[in-house]
Image (cartoon, rainbow, N blue to C red; front, side, top):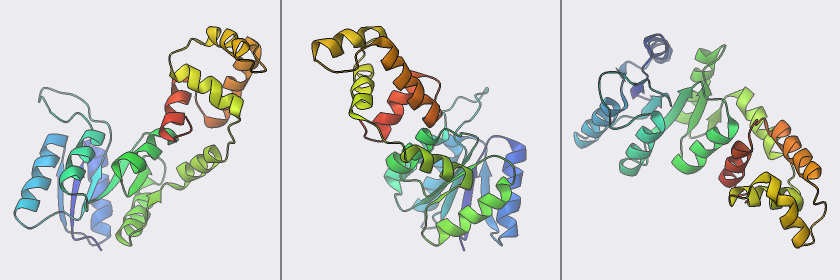
Length: 221
């Protein structure tokens, strides 16, 4: 089991909960901080002293207060420390539930686990720690199912075309003319709206911008 863990969490109740979970697992060497800058300093100093941390557990969102910070959130913290210590195991413990954003953390920042703050999250966090320690990736079961459903959606060539046009900055109302000029059918505005609404409904988005961002993250466009 992990021997040395750093917790970066600005909410005291969540911080204490994570500490208790680690203690229940028999992990005694635990440091907890409330700011990402402090977390990065502790991680760097420990590594410099040949006593590196085995695991970082961090939230994504940190509230601003009177102490000005260079790193404003967990994503920035992970990005900074992974450049210096790519072998460090990282579990994100956050309320973020959008699967596209979570998938990008695995893809872009090479995190090892993601646990969503929700009912029974202490138990889920224990499962995540065990899985990551054994070298596996871990995603909360509810999120795993949502991601599976999203990845099962089959984008048609028409879907990809209209999403690509939106990504290029074209307004939705201008897409029909472009399709007509390029002999792409259907080209009616109602058909475009129906496809976009269907994709957003299946993928759990409310805005076209979210859909475009997801497709970029997943290399669909």
